[in-house]
Image (cartoon, rainbow, N blue to C red; front, side, top):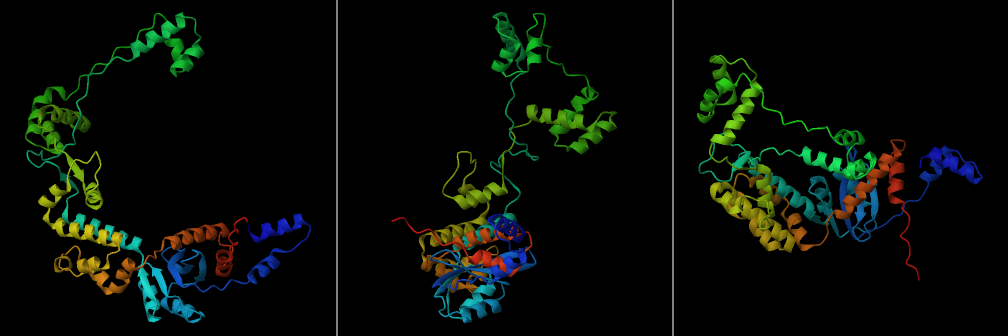
Length: 403
């Protein structure tokens, strides 16, 4: 609650303290000084894209240890120098300032595995955007150049209103009220009243109205079979004297393509291809393309695919030797899509390999960042960094187990 609300609460309790006094008392609350052996570090935004701070958490208790005003390496270094006992290890994301400050103090830095996998996914997306088109044909043989999506044959329209009218009239003759019939059939009572009239007859289906384009249909079919675009077809028909709308040309061309052209081509999006490459060997029932087909027709995906699968397996199995062999593989380091990603890994190779040797990660730190964001928004800008730090660090103790 805010200081004003706390002032009102104290008045209800029988004593009066101004909100300024409450803030002064709150600012004098002693902040616990906790020395953690293993810590987790992450940044949070005071104003996204402009100002950032640092949160430091204990890896054992998963509780915040301290907040820093910035995420600069100098402030983190000063904080480490003021500790009575420095931590042994620290898990961080790939922000270089944190790694620089920790390595200068001879602290083992463990890279967060989630951020490694997230960067790997972004690398796969960039490679697919460079190598693959936006739509990949599943069966290139006999493909249609403009690539219609597969169309399901449509059945003739059935008359569905007459059985409903007969049901309403039968229920009405049996003595049911209009409201009861409406509740049973989930209809409006006015509709039931209309259907209950013995003289009511459902209106017949509407016939297709004649259109100006009807006498140009032979020319339109010829344009479609010759692979004309819609604009070219419209221009050709207007040259022959057509004065109708462009929408009629579009809809009639679509009807002709459905009836007269070969089997339409099936495509898969680039996004689905990324998912297939990432989730291999697991598949979904609706997948219409196999990874082996992609690797055969797009050879530039073979090396990135093998590297991504090996990298994920090494992280999952905590195999540092396998991970090091992947990063130093000449075929991987020379690949244009992986060169930049692997080069950044080599700059912090010990930090990356530590992610396989130790179990620390930054998941609990992300949870504390979410809690910090909630507290910051609850304050609505009415408190400064000192009050935010007190609210984050001075938490209630964990309830002791009942004896």
